Length: 329
Image (tube, rainbow, N blue to C red):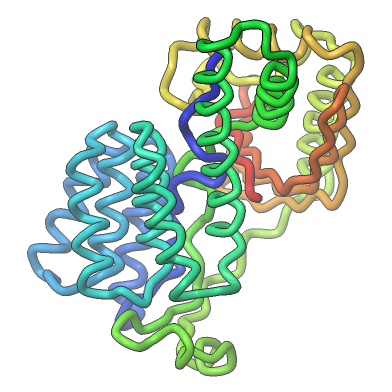
């Protein structure tokens, strides 16, 4: 089975809002929320109107690039992120998003160069470091595939290729909500090293506090998450899939049936699976939708991973089901 081209730390919405003023921040936050809710067409219309009035707003251009990518208009998104990196070379996130788009097209060398540029501007940017490691692994996979084409009996290449495929077998591509709109503005024109944490806090426009989660709703959502993890661990595939809403947004936009077949294959292959959930934090987005973030320890056969994860949950007939699943590495 060929490896997916998408990086695990994929397109960052990262509305790590480098905006200019509270009103603009509110506008962009609303647009980002539309996109996060799957309303890309409406979000694109809003962002185009905003850009027409604010043509030099880097954050708006950034959001437009992400929206276009989510609509599979990859070439347009690449042009936007390339333009941002040329005009604002000290911002690491656009470089990272370029790498994700290039990797999705199988252009690993371009992806590698984009990630190296991201790290050059921001050496502590963990996402770029991890994605760069993934790029090297995928390039190695192609090399091992080539070696096996030339010598199908090469057991060393077979074993190494199997290890790489195991590494990515449970990886999912995050969707746009990989990072929800944040409230830490940074001025894009300034070099990264000049944006000190203390200064960012002074410039930040504090958002309204999220609505408190009622104890009973909190307990219901937590129970649903634990039930999902238990079904995964016990390889109860039907119960696992039943945890997902009928309107679940699949990671790569594939059909629900194709995604379910892939999950059945990946869950049934290992002899045993262990999924432990900890540090669950829930934020309500209205009465019937919530974001739940937590730490996930996944172990299966030769693979062990500890990742952060976000589940977008919705209340459907009294049951909290998964609308979106995002790996927050």
